[in-house]
Image (cartoon, rainbow, N blue to C red; front, top):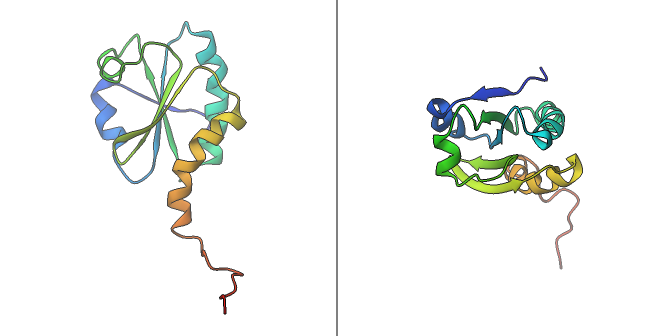
Length: 124
């Protein structure tokens, strides 16, 4: 636990498919803000286990995918749902702000299982 999965260009397509939303962190070893956001992403990965998958893609070692998604600055985090890009976050962001951007995309899968009429009264 606490370690995020590192992926490559070759594994990218397979990683972003599936029911669980996937946050891809485009980063590099030399990037200070990338190192600042890493522990935040690790915390979120643990807290949101089962609801969100977080993977890291090193832009120095894998250049095809960042070019395909026009990643020009890092850190860039792109959230994929069912293989489609639904959110793009550029730069370091503290955990509360980052969660605020991610939660609307996570709530959909949680809302399906939550009862929506609990405690509601029927209008007369």
